[in-house]
Image (tube, rainbow, N blue to C red; front, side, top):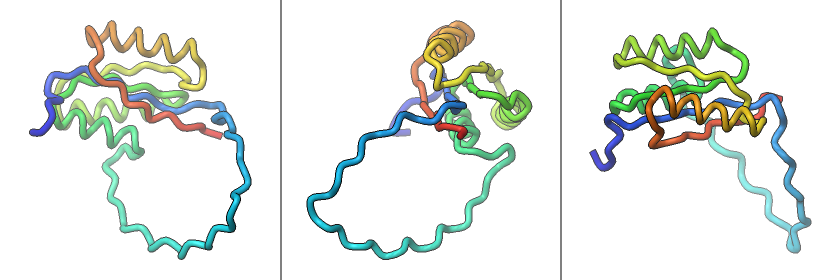
Length: 131
């Protein structure tokens, strides 16, 4: 294994109810050519529960990491993800609610995950706006 994730404490964050801040746009000094259309994406197979955060959590668990997962509003989905990880890989998954668009929630989620896992080695920011 080129990296050691076994016995690492990992927090995977969820999304936000708030839109991300808009970035300023600048006009291009030169006209840009129109790119060709992208090829169709390959078919994807998701393990239930689905979502990038859930898949990331499953991968870390498969490597032997101890996990804390964060969710914004869907406690059932977070619990289902934790149960699936525990079923497949053993261990106990910590679930922490919080909106990653709210600074106080971010700080609380990190504190709670760190306390439950007795420290954090990796934080995966999977936060996107839900709007």
